[in-house]
Length: 327
Image (tube, rainbow, N blue to C red; front, top):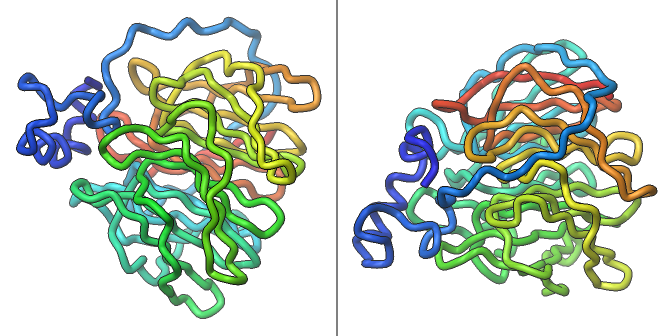
């Protein structure tokens, strides 16, 4: 099991599963409950020279939290949900990089962490997640123009600790857990018709992963028990291919895409990490980049004008720190 800092976040889940007699008598097992990662041997890290980019510290998020999700609309970064000092959150806070300031927005109808977010045509879609007891298939949409939320058609299955990406106006929800296991499932949401369709699955079940889109291809990165794995999904052919492994295997990481490169930042690997590794799909190679000031996992990231904003996360408790990386 992870360190003690994780037990606060998932203690209700472990208790519930223990009562259902699916956890080991000594604690909450990752086999029966993949929302709590098991103890692992250290993952060997490829040593590369750190090159390129600068980090700066920005205005702190008003609410400290981990397990949140982030979406960017018209240059504003929206931090949605997560797990704070009082439990799962409905909190929505918006960060304006131009003024380095935060404002509070209308709360999400359903409190949850471990959710995923995608933005299509200026609308933010919050999908899945859980409330420390129940995994959700809930989909709720936020319109920043009216500061309002509406409920949309649910996902075909409940998923938490999933990832999402948007390609050609459709939102793809990949992987995640329903407390029985990590799933390889891929569901595509069409906001125009408010409908879901099932797509080709990944090669293996994955949760606590992250995702990014480069040139119309969706990349699934890392995850629980798939820490090095990188797979690419082509919506045009509805197919997956395996790509070069991430040098430092991680879960609960964040991903940002700048100028055709995918940046995998921080995450969990036998502890909170400070890693920043960049993948170039054109060459299939990884480069080690400068690490951020804060070691963390369960964070989120958004990109505005070629700058990656890394937000929140956990390291011995939920964080409200915000740091910006300019590659």
